[in-house]
Image (cartoon, rainbow, N blue to C red):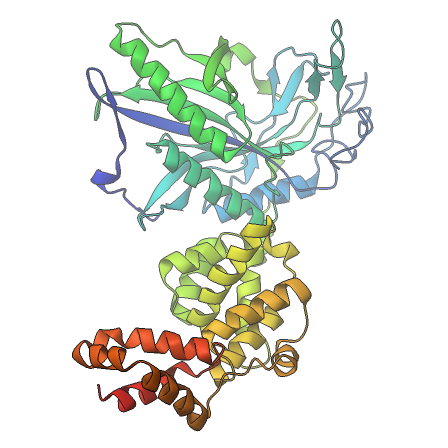
Length: 496
């Protein structure tokens, strides 16, 4: 296992009234498995159906109904384990986790306890300052989701929707390796990216397909671990950060007032900016785990694992390293481009399209600055971009040929974004070619010099003022003068 150590100065300490505190965070991420059917039944996993529309007799726990394992859900868990560089346990067991809740018809949840399908792994997390560190993965196990209780449709009744009941979840448990809200957000972001690359979970937090239980404790720097509280079912990366900061402050205040932290499960209220107690924290023995008698142990053949491994896509870390090596990108630019698989694919189509390989740095700059900037402004993502990779490639070719300048390219991009069309045709039709005729540029320069004798004297005394002449000449030429030719002519005419 590769070790990426966090630099000492990156540890985020929180100042309290009696000194500094360190927050310690571990995550339990529940990722809905991307599959057409549920973990133990053939019912649909489609989102948005009418209440209780996607419920089989197994999901409803009708007498005599027996679970049957969905092989694709197991395959997705193994793929995820491989993507997390984790140990794949060829022998694992499904257990019954016993508790009562109205939206859990069986009175127990089928989960995995002592023998999960995936063991120890790691996630390498990149921070904005360029540093990276490793978060250890303790385990990944498969379990079925519960249904949903609805309390706001009636003043006197609660309703139960079992559409989610039995949907396959992967619970991915990290070690307590995170030390700040920003680190936790970066970890979940990276984990979500890996899952989306693998195609094992769509990561849609708005639909509840990815949610996190966040374990938070505080301690004096370097001291023993404190008592942790678990914040349940946080469903956005922004809320994860807010919940950690609020909970850490709450615990620090209690400890500094001489109190003690009770181990409990809490909920985060983003509207009030507070966590509130939900129930005292259960231990494993409270759930009375035992192997599910209706399910045989899960024995996986090593050849099947190898087959799944061979068909994995290129993952973000490997893709980032290749972009840096192959296209000469900075780690930051490569990181931005590989954050989403669709974005990385789009960039590569820009570089590799049209038969000739284009300059990677130029393509990255244009995609990140022009395209992403414009998409963000419109509230769109790369999948709904009105500009194709082929159109961006054509704009870059026009710049490379000297047909248009970088400034004209921005105007051309705006036209293509709003109106569409072939960039070459647009440049011809609208007369957007840059002027490379030195005679025409000289004429513009001569007129500016003749009209501004005072400025000529100033630039000859202070050559850094050349920019003023460049600006005037560009303005006079409608931004079409070739910048290099213009600079050369100005320097010659002004004698600098």
